[in-house]
Length: 486
Ligand code: ARG
Image (cartoon, rainbow, N blue to C red; front, top):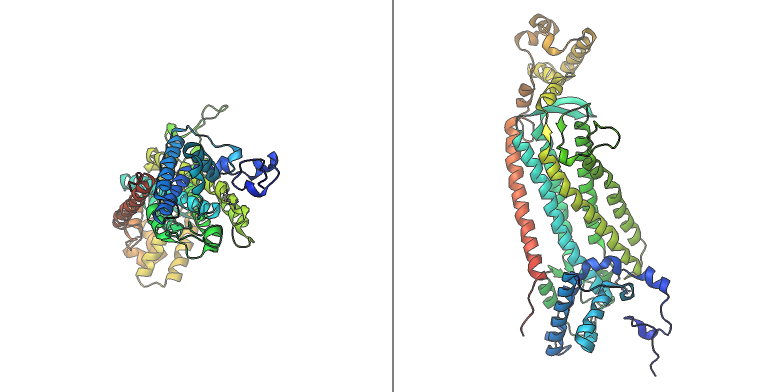
Protein backbone atom coordinates (compact mmCIF):
# COMPACT_ATOMS: atom_id res chain seq x y z
CA UNK A 1 0.00 0.00 0.00
CA UNK A 2 1.28 3.44 -0.86
CA UNK A 3 0.52 6.14 1.65
CA UNK A 4 -0.10 9.57 0.18
CA UNK A 5 2.56 12.19 0.95
CA UNK A 6 1.20 15.61 1.91
CA UNK A 7 3.12 17.38 -0.83
CA UNK A 8 4.80 16.73 -4.12
CA UNK A 9 8.29 17.09 -2.63
CA UNK A 10 11.10 15.35 -4.48
CA UNK A 11 11.70 13.40 -1.30
CA UNK A 12 8.01 13.05 -0.29
CA UNK A 13 7.64 9.26 -0.47
CA UNK A 14 8.99 8.45 2.96
CA UNK A 15 6.90 11.08 4.66
CA UNK A 16 3.36 10.90 5.93
CA UNK A 17 3.13 14.48 7.17
CA UNK A 18 3.34 17.58 5.03
CA UNK A 19 6.29 19.85 5.79
CA UNK A 20 5.62 22.65 8.23
CA UNK A 21 5.38 26.04 6.52
CA UNK A 22 8.15 27.35 8.76
CA UNK A 23 10.45 24.51 7.78
CA UNK A 24 9.67 25.16 4.16
CA UNK A 25 10.68 28.81 4.33
CA UNK A 26 13.82 28.12 6.36
CA UNK A 27 14.90 25.18 4.23
CA UNK A 28 14.35 26.71 0.80
CA UNK A 29 17.24 28.06 -1.22
CA UNK A 30 15.15 28.89 -4.26
CA UNK A 31 15.13 32.64 -3.54
CA UNK A 32 18.85 32.81 -4.24
CA UNK A 33 19.86 29.66 -6.13
CA UNK A 34 17.47 30.71 -8.91
CA UNK A 35 20.50 32.65 -10.13
CA UNK A 36 21.93 29.34 -11.30
CA UNK A 37 18.86 28.36 -13.30
CA UNK A 38 20.63 28.48 -16.66
CA UNK A 39 23.50 26.39 -15.36
CA UNK A 40 21.06 23.97 -13.76
CA UNK A 41 19.11 23.45 -16.96
CA UNK A 42 22.24 23.15 -19.06
CA UNK A 43 23.65 20.55 -16.66
CA UNK A 44 20.40 18.58 -16.88
CA UNK A 45 20.51 18.66 -20.67
CA UNK A 46 24.00 17.18 -20.62
CA UNK A 47 22.87 14.57 -18.11
CA UNK A 48 19.79 13.62 -20.18
CA UNK A 49 21.88 13.30 -23.35
CA UNK A 50 24.31 11.02 -21.57
CA UNK A 51 21.52 8.86 -20.07
CA UNK A 52 20.12 8.39 -23.58
CA UNK A 53 23.43 7.60 -25.19
CA UNK A 54 24.26 5.04 -22.50
CA UNK A 55 20.86 3.36 -22.85
CA UNK A 56 20.03 4.14 -19.22
CA UNK A 57 16.88 5.73 -20.62
CA UNK A 58 15.70 5.36 -24.20
CA UNK A 59 16.97 7.75 -26.90
CA UNK A 60 13.41 8.95 -27.35
CA UNK A 61 13.01 9.71 -23.65
CA UNK A 62 16.30 11.59 -23.74
CA UNK A 63 15.06 13.68 -26.67
CA UNK A 64 11.81 14.51 -24.88
CA UNK A 65 13.71 15.56 -21.78
CA UNK A 66 16.13 17.70 -23.75
CA UNK A 67 13.39 19.42 -25.75
CA UNK A 68 11.45 20.10 -22.57
CA UNK A 69 14.52 21.47 -20.82
CA UNK A 70 15.23 23.87 -23.68
CA UNK A 71 11.68 25.10 -23.32
CA UNK A 72 12.12 25.62 -19.57
CA UNK A 73 15.28 27.58 -20.37
CA UNK A 74 13.47 29.75 -22.91
CA UNK A 75 10.71 30.42 -20.37
CA UNK A 76 13.26 31.26 -17.69
CA UNK A 77 15.08 33.63 -20.06
CA UNK A 78 11.80 35.31 -20.98
CA UNK A 79 10.87 35.59 -17.31
CA UNK A 80 7.75 33.49 -17.92
CA UNK A 81 8.41 30.91 -15.30
CA UNK A 82 8.55 31.65 -11.62
CA UNK A 83 9.85 29.38 -8.90
CA UNK A 84 8.11 29.36 -5.53
CA UNK A 85 9.10 28.46 -2.00
CA UNK A 86 7.30 25.14 -2.46
CA UNK A 87 9.86 24.31 -5.15
CA UNK A 88 12.49 24.28 -2.37
CA UNK A 89 15.44 24.86 -4.67
CA UNK A 90 16.19 25.61 -8.29
CA UNK A 91 16.86 21.94 -9.05
CA UNK A 92 13.45 20.68 -7.98
CA UNK A 93 11.79 23.79 -9.43
CA UNK A 94 13.18 23.10 -12.89
CA UNK A 95 12.13 19.46 -12.68
CA UNK A 96 8.64 20.48 -11.57
CA UNK A 97 8.27 22.78 -14.60
CA UNK A 98 9.72 20.08 -16.87
CA UNK A 99 7.05 17.65 -15.63
CA UNK A 100 4.35 20.20 -16.44
CA UNK A 101 5.72 20.36 -19.99
CA UNK A 102 6.72 16.77 -20.84
CA UNK A 103 4.72 14.76 -18.30
CA UNK A 104 5.80 11.63 -16.47
CA UNK A 105 9.02 11.09 -18.41
CA UNK A 106 10.42 14.05 -16.43
CA UNK A 107 10.70 11.61 -13.55
CA UNK A 108 13.54 9.84 -15.39
CA UNK A 109 15.82 12.88 -15.44
CA UNK A 110 17.06 12.32 -11.91
CA UNK A 111 18.25 8.77 -12.69
CA UNK A 112 21.92 8.32 -11.76
CA UNK A 113 22.10 11.74 -10.17
CA UNK A 114 21.63 13.41 -6.80
CA UNK A 115 20.96 17.01 -5.95
CA UNK A 116 24.35 16.90 -4.25
CA UNK A 117 26.43 16.35 -7.40
CA UNK A 118 23.93 18.46 -9.33
CA UNK A 119 24.21 21.46 -6.97
CA UNK A 120 28.00 21.24 -7.07
CA UNK A 121 27.99 21.12 -10.85
CA UNK A 122 25.66 24.11 -11.13
CA UNK A 123 27.65 26.22 -8.73
CA UNK A 124 30.94 25.39 -10.43
CA UNK A 125 29.48 26.35 -13.80
CA UNK A 126 28.16 29.58 -12.31
CA UNK A 127 31.44 30.34 -10.57
CA UNK A 128 33.41 29.81 -13.78
CA UNK A 129 31.24 32.47 -15.43
CA UNK A 130 31.64 34.79 -12.46
CA UNK A 131 35.42 34.35 -12.46
CA UNK A 132 35.61 35.31 -16.13
CA UNK A 133 33.50 38.42 -15.48
CA UNK A 134 35.77 39.30 -12.54
CA UNK A 135 38.87 38.80 -14.70
CA UNK A 136 37.42 41.21 -17.24
CA UNK A 137 36.50 43.71 -14.52
CA UNK A 138 40.00 43.64 -13.08
CA UNK A 139 41.42 44.22 -16.56
CA UNK A 140 39.03 47.15 -17.13
CA UNK A 141 40.46 48.91 -14.11
CA UNK A 142 44.05 48.01 -14.99
CA UNK A 143 43.53 49.30 -18.54
CA UNK A 144 42.05 52.54 -17.25
CA UNK A 145 45.01 53.11 -14.92
CA UNK A 146 47.52 52.30 -17.65
CA UNK A 147 45.72 54.77 -19.91
CA UNK A 148 45.81 57.53 -17.28
CA UNK A 149 49.50 56.77 -16.70
CA UNK A 150 50.25 57.05 -20.43
CA UNK A 151 48.27 60.28 -20.80
CA UNK A 152 50.10 61.90 -17.88
CA UNK A 153 53.56 60.47 -18.43
CA UNK A 154 55.30 63.75 -17.47
CA UNK A 155 53.62 64.40 -14.15
CA UNK A 156 55.75 64.24 -11.04
CA UNK A 157 54.36 63.70 -7.58
CA UNK A 158 55.71 63.11 -4.11
CA UNK A 159 56.28 59.46 -3.31
CA UNK A 160 55.43 58.64 0.28
CA UNK A 161 56.41 56.27 3.00
CA UNK A 162 54.54 56.48 6.31
CA UNK A 163 52.42 59.05 4.45
CA UNK A 164 55.40 61.43 4.78
CA UNK A 165 56.89 62.90 1.62
CA UNK A 166 59.85 60.67 0.81
CA UNK A 167 61.20 60.93 -2.76
CA UNK A 168 59.71 62.24 -5.99
CA UNK A 169 58.13 59.67 -8.30
CA UNK A 170 56.22 59.84 -11.54
CA UNK A 171 52.43 59.74 -11.21
CA UNK A 172 52.58 57.05 -13.90
CA UNK A 173 54.87 54.99 -11.68
CA UNK A 174 52.42 55.29 -8.80
CA UNK A 175 49.46 54.27 -10.97
CA UNK A 176 51.39 51.37 -12.49
CA UNK A 177 51.92 50.01 -8.99
CA UNK A 178 48.15 49.39 -8.96
CA UNK A 179 48.37 47.78 -12.38
CA UNK A 180 50.83 45.30 -10.85
CA UNK A 181 48.39 44.54 -8.02
CA UNK A 182 45.56 44.06 -10.49
CA UNK A 183 47.69 41.76 -12.64
CA UNK A 184 48.22 39.57 -9.61
CA UNK A 185 44.47 39.70 -8.97
CA UNK A 186 43.95 38.43 -12.48
CA UNK A 187 46.36 35.57 -11.77
CA UNK A 188 44.53 34.71 -8.59
CA UNK A 189 41.20 34.57 -10.46
CA UNK A 190 42.73 32.50 -13.24
CA UNK A 191 44.10 30.14 -10.65
CA UNK A 192 40.74 29.89 -8.88
CA UNK A 193 39.22 29.14 -12.29
CA UNK A 194 41.59 26.21 -12.77
CA UNK A 195 40.48 24.64 -9.50
CA UNK A 196 36.82 25.39 -10.19
CA UNK A 197 36.98 23.68 -13.56
CA UNK A 198 36.17 20.20 -12.22
CA UNK A 199 32.88 18.36 -12.78
CA UNK A 200 31.25 16.70 -9.73
CA UNK A 201 28.38 15.18 -11.74
CA UNK A 202 28.55 11.40 -11.43
CA UNK A 203 29.43 11.48 -7.74
CA UNK A 204 25.75 10.91 -6.99
CA UNK A 205 24.73 11.61 -3.41
CA UNK A 206 28.20 10.75 -2.11
CA UNK A 207 29.39 7.30 -3.23
CA UNK A 208 28.99 7.28 -7.00
CA UNK A 209 26.05 5.76 -8.88
CA UNK A 210 25.01 2.26 -9.91
CA UNK A 211 24.41 3.01 -13.59
CA UNK A 212 26.88 2.74 -16.50
CA UNK A 213 27.21 6.51 -16.86
CA UNK A 214 29.75 8.18 -19.13
CA UNK A 215 31.23 11.02 -17.12
CA UNK A 216 33.62 11.91 -19.91
CA UNK A 217 30.70 12.64 -22.22
CA UNK A 218 29.02 15.00 -19.72
CA UNK A 219 32.34 16.63 -18.92
CA UNK A 220 33.01 17.42 -22.57
CA UNK A 221 29.44 18.59 -23.16
CA UNK A 222 29.61 21.00 -20.20
CA UNK A 223 33.11 22.23 -21.00
CA UNK A 224 34.79 21.16 -17.78
CA UNK A 225 38.50 20.50 -17.80
CA UNK A 226 38.30 17.27 -15.80
CA UNK A 227 36.03 15.12 -13.64
CA UNK A 228 36.28 14.88 -9.87
CA UNK A 229 38.44 12.00 -8.67
CA UNK A 230 36.65 11.25 -5.40
CA UNK A 231 32.87 11.25 -5.03
CA UNK A 232 32.92 12.20 -1.33
CA UNK A 233 35.17 15.15 -2.02
CA UNK A 234 33.13 16.08 -5.09
CA UNK A 235 29.90 16.69 -3.15
CA UNK A 236 31.49 18.38 -0.14
CA UNK A 237 34.32 20.47 -1.60
CA UNK A 238 33.74 24.22 -1.57
CA UNK A 239 37.41 25.24 -1.81
CA UNK A 240 36.67 26.86 -5.15
CA UNK A 241 34.09 29.10 -3.48
CA UNK A 242 36.71 30.06 -0.92
CA UNK A 243 39.31 30.66 -3.63
CA UNK A 244 36.89 33.00 -5.35
CA UNK A 245 35.95 34.75 -2.12
CA UNK A 246 39.61 35.21 -1.27
CA UNK A 247 40.41 36.57 -4.72
CA UNK A 248 37.48 38.99 -4.27
CA UNK A 249 38.76 40.01 -0.83
CA UNK A 250 42.19 40.90 -2.23
CA UNK A 251 40.64 42.82 -5.13
CA UNK A 252 38.50 44.71 -2.62
CA UNK A 253 41.60 45.50 -0.59
CA UNK A 254 43.42 46.84 -3.66
CA UNK A 255 40.42 48.90 -4.76
CA UNK A 256 40.12 50.22 -1.22
CA UNK A 257 43.74 51.39 -1.17
CA UNK A 258 43.30 53.16 -4.50
CA UNK A 259 40.04 54.65 -3.26
CA UNK A 260 41.72 55.92 -0.10
CA UNK A 261 44.37 57.70 -2.16
CA UNK A 262 41.75 59.26 -4.40
CA UNK A 263 39.92 60.50 -1.31
CA UNK A 264 43.10 62.00 0.11
CA UNK A 265 44.28 63.45 -3.18
CA UNK A 266 40.98 65.12 -3.92
CA UNK A 267 40.88 66.80 -0.49
CA UNK A 268 41.86 70.46 -0.06
CA UNK A 269 44.86 69.28 1.96
CA UNK A 270 46.37 67.60 -1.10
CA UNK A 271 44.52 68.95 -4.16
CA UNK A 272 46.35 66.57 -6.49
CA UNK A 273 43.26 65.72 -8.44
CA UNK A 274 39.74 66.82 -9.05
CA UNK A 275 37.08 64.21 -9.67
CA UNK A 276 34.58 64.83 -12.46
CA UNK A 277 31.20 66.13 -11.35
CA UNK A 278 29.59 63.03 -12.81
CA UNK A 279 31.52 60.88 -10.36
CA UNK A 280 31.04 62.90 -7.19
CA UNK A 281 28.09 63.86 -5.05
CA UNK A 282 27.11 66.99 -3.17
CA UNK A 283 25.95 67.72 0.33
CA UNK A 284 22.35 68.49 1.20
CA UNK A 285 23.45 71.20 3.63
CA UNK A 286 26.88 72.47 2.52
CA UNK A 287 26.53 73.94 -0.96
CA UNK A 288 30.28 73.98 -1.65
CA UNK A 289 30.85 70.26 -1.06
CA UNK A 290 31.97 67.77 -3.65
CA UNK A 291 32.37 64.36 -2.11
CA UNK A 292 34.24 61.31 -3.37
CA UNK A 293 31.35 58.97 -2.52
CA UNK A 294 32.28 56.34 -5.12
CA UNK A 295 35.74 56.00 -3.69
CA UNK A 296 34.35 55.91 -0.16
CA UNK A 297 31.92 53.15 -1.07
CA UNK A 298 34.65 51.19 -2.84
CA UNK A 299 36.61 51.43 0.40
CA UNK A 300 33.57 50.72 2.60
CA UNK A 301 32.31 47.69 0.71
CA UNK A 302 35.57 45.93 1.47
CA UNK A 303 34.11 45.09 4.88
CA UNK A 304 31.32 42.92 3.53
CA UNK A 305 33.63 41.23 1.04
CA UNK A 306 35.99 40.22 3.86
CA UNK A 307 32.93 39.18 5.90
CA UNK A 308 31.76 36.83 3.15
CA UNK A 309 35.13 35.07 3.12
CA UNK A 310 35.11 34.59 6.89
CA UNK A 311 31.47 33.46 6.80
CA UNK A 312 32.22 30.69 4.31
CA UNK A 313 35.42 29.61 6.03
CA UNK A 314 33.42 29.29 9.23
CA UNK A 315 30.55 27.43 7.58
CA UNK A 316 32.89 24.85 6.06
CA UNK A 317 34.86 24.32 9.24
CA UNK A 318 34.06 21.18 11.18
CA UNK A 319 31.69 19.62 8.63
CA UNK A 320 31.93 15.85 8.55
CA UNK A 321 32.10 14.29 5.10
CA UNK A 322 30.32 14.45 2.85
CA UNK A 323 27.43 16.73 1.90
CA UNK A 324 25.71 18.63 4.70
CA UNK A 325 22.93 21.15 4.31
CA UNK A 326 25.24 23.75 5.82
CA UNK A 327 26.82 23.87 2.38
CA UNK A 328 23.70 25.57 1.03
CA UNK A 329 25.11 28.63 2.83
CA UNK A 330 27.86 28.80 0.18
CA UNK A 331 25.81 30.72 -2.36
CA UNK A 332 24.76 34.00 -0.77
CA UNK A 333 28.24 35.10 0.34
CA UNK A 334 29.63 34.12 -3.05
CA UNK A 335 26.93 35.95 -5.00
CA UNK A 336 27.30 39.01 -2.78
CA UNK A 337 31.07 39.23 -3.13
CA UNK A 338 30.92 38.75 -6.89
CA UNK A 339 28.17 41.38 -7.24
CA UNK A 340 29.98 43.83 -4.99
CA UNK A 341 33.31 43.49 -6.78
CA UNK A 342 31.76 43.68 -10.25
CA UNK A 343 29.88 46.84 -9.23
CA UNK A 344 33.07 48.38 -7.82
CA UNK A 345 35.06 47.48 -10.92
CA UNK A 346 32.29 49.03 -12.99
CA UNK A 347 32.59 52.51 -11.44
CA UNK A 348 36.27 52.90 -10.62
CA UNK A 349 37.56 52.85 -14.24
CA UNK A 350 35.41 55.76 -15.47
CA UNK A 351 36.03 57.65 -12.23
CA UNK A 352 39.80 57.36 -12.77
CA UNK A 353 39.58 58.16 -16.48
CA UNK A 354 37.63 61.37 -15.92
CA UNK A 355 39.66 62.74 -13.00
CA UNK A 356 41.69 65.91 -13.67
CA UNK A 357 45.24 65.90 -12.37
CA UNK A 358 46.78 69.02 -10.84
CA UNK A 359 50.33 68.67 -12.15
CA UNK A 360 51.37 72.01 -10.66
CA UNK A 361 50.30 71.04 -7.15
CA UNK A 362 51.95 67.65 -7.35
CA UNK A 363 55.21 69.04 -8.77
CA UNK A 364 55.40 71.62 -5.99
CA UNK A 365 54.79 69.00 -3.34
CA UNK A 366 57.24 66.57 -4.96
CA UNK A 367 60.35 68.51 -3.97
CA UNK A 368 59.08 70.16 -0.80
CA UNK A 369 60.08 68.95 2.65
CA UNK A 370 63.59 67.96 1.59
CA UNK A 371 62.44 65.14 -0.64
CA UNK A 372 65.78 65.42 -2.45
CA UNK A 373 67.88 64.74 0.66
CA UNK A 374 68.59 61.16 -0.39
CA UNK A 375 69.98 62.49 -3.68
CA UNK A 376 72.38 64.72 -1.73
CA UNK A 377 73.55 61.80 0.41
CA UNK A 378 73.90 59.63 -2.71
CA UNK A 379 76.12 62.28 -4.33
CA UNK A 380 78.50 62.15 -1.37
CA UNK A 381 78.48 58.36 -1.37
CA UNK A 382 79.21 58.24 -5.08
CA UNK A 383 82.30 60.29 -4.32
CA UNK A 384 83.70 57.89 -1.79
CA UNK A 385 82.01 59.01 1.44
CA UNK A 386 80.65 55.93 3.24
CA UNK A 387 76.85 56.05 2.91
CA UNK A 388 76.26 56.09 6.69
CA UNK A 389 78.47 59.16 6.98
CA UNK A 390 76.86 60.78 3.94
CA UNK A 391 73.47 60.18 5.55
CA UNK A 392 74.66 61.83 8.77
CA UNK A 393 76.07 64.87 6.96
CA UNK A 394 72.92 65.35 4.91
CA UNK A 395 70.73 64.86 7.98
CA UNK A 396 72.61 67.66 9.74
CA UNK A 397 72.22 69.83 6.66
CA UNK A 398 68.44 69.27 6.67
CA UNK A 399 68.33 70.11 10.38
CA UNK A 400 70.27 73.36 9.85
CA UNK A 401 68.11 74.34 6.89
CA UNK A 402 64.96 73.80 8.95
CA UNK A 403 66.42 75.90 11.79
CA UNK A 404 67.22 78.71 9.36
CA UNK A 405 63.99 78.43 7.40
CA UNK A 406 65.80 77.52 4.18
CA UNK A 407 65.47 74.91 1.48
CA UNK A 408 68.33 73.28 -0.47
CA UNK A 409 67.60 75.66 -3.34
CA UNK A 410 68.34 78.66 -1.10
CA UNK A 411 71.92 77.54 -0.32
CA UNK A 412 74.79 79.38 -2.02
CA UNK A 413 77.76 77.66 -3.67
CA UNK A 414 79.87 78.70 -0.67
CA UNK A 415 77.40 77.26 1.78
CA UNK A 416 77.37 73.96 -0.11
CA UNK A 417 81.18 73.90 -0.18
CA UNK A 418 81.27 74.47 3.57
CA UNK A 419 79.19 71.38 4.18
CA UNK A 420 81.52 68.98 2.37
CA UNK A 421 84.35 69.36 -0.19
CA UNK A 422 82.42 67.13 -2.61
CA UNK A 423 79.70 69.79 -2.73
CA UNK A 424 82.29 72.38 -3.74
CA UNK A 425 82.70 70.51 -7.03
CA UNK A 426 79.17 69.31 -7.59
CA UNK A 427 75.76 70.12 -6.17
CA UNK A 428 73.06 67.48 -5.65
CA UNK A 429 69.86 67.29 -7.72
CA UNK A 430 67.66 70.26 -7.01
CA UNK A 431 64.83 69.37 -9.34
CA UNK A 432 62.51 66.44 -9.32
CA UNK A 433 63.36 65.43 -12.86
CA UNK A 434 67.08 65.06 -12.04
CA UNK A 435 66.16 62.97 -9.05
CA UNK A 436 63.84 60.77 -11.13
CA UNK A 437 66.34 60.27 -13.94
CA UNK A 438 68.93 59.08 -11.45
CA UNK A 439 66.71 56.13 -10.49
CA UNK A 440 67.49 54.35 -13.69
CA UNK A 441 67.19 50.74 -12.57
CA UNK A 442 64.68 48.12 -13.68
CA UNK A 443 61.46 48.89 -11.82
CA UNK A 444 62.70 52.36 -10.85
CA UNK A 445 60.90 55.64 -11.36
CA UNK A 446 63.24 57.07 -14.05
CA UNK A 447 61.04 58.18 -16.97
CA UNK A 448 62.66 55.68 -19.39
CA UNK A 449 62.12 52.87 -16.90
CA UNK A 450 58.50 53.83 -16.34
CA UNK A 451 57.95 53.95 -20.10
CA UNK A 452 59.45 50.46 -20.32
CA UNK A 453 57.19 49.33 -17.47
CA UNK A 454 54.13 50.71 -19.21
CA UNK A 455 54.91 48.84 -22.42
CA UNK A 456 55.43 45.58 -20.52
CA UNK A 457 52.27 46.08 -18.47
CA UNK A 458 50.19 46.76 -21.57
CA UNK A 459 51.50 43.64 -23.26
CA UNK A 460 50.69 41.59 -20.20
CA UNK A 461 47.20 43.10 -19.97
CA UNK A 462 46.53 42.37 -23.64
CA UNK A 463 47.56 38.74 -23.13
CA UNK A 464 45.31 38.45 -20.10
CA UNK A 465 42.46 40.06 -22.03
CA UNK A 466 42.78 37.46 -24.78
CA UNK A 467 42.86 34.66 -22.22
CA UNK A 468 39.68 35.91 -20.53
CA UNK A 469 37.96 36.33 -23.90
CA UNK A 470 38.78 32.73 -24.85
CA UNK A 471 37.33 31.43 -21.57
CA UNK A 472 34.27 33.59 -22.07
CA UNK A 473 33.75 32.30 -25.59
CA UNK A 474 34.14 28.66 -24.53
CA UNK A 475 31.54 29.22 -21.84
CA UNK A 476 29.06 30.92 -24.16
CA UNK A 477 29.45 28.05 -26.60
CA UNK A 478 28.47 25.58 -23.86
CA UNK A 479 25.54 27.67 -22.68
CA UNK A 480 24.04 28.02 -26.15
CA UNK A 481 24.83 24.48 -27.37
CA UNK A 482 21.96 23.76 -29.75
CA UNK A 483 19.65 20.76 -29.32
CA UNK A 484 21.31 17.60 -30.57
CA UNK A 485 19.84 15.70 -33.51
CA UNK A 486 20.50 12.05 -32.89
N1 ARG B 1 19.77 23.49 -2.17
C1 ARG B 1 20.77 22.54 -1.86
C2 ARG B 1 22.13 23.22 -1.69
O1 ARG B 1 22.26 24.31 -2.10
C3 ARG B 1 20.88 21.54 -2.96
C4 ARG B 1 21.39 20.21 -2.53
C5 ARG B 1 20.39 19.58 -1.65
N2 ARG B 1 20.79 18.26 -1.25
C6 ARG B 1 20.22 17.61 -0.27
N3 ARG B 1 20.67 16.46 0.00
N4 ARG B 1 19.25 18.15 0.43
O2 ARG B 1 23.04 22.69 -1.08
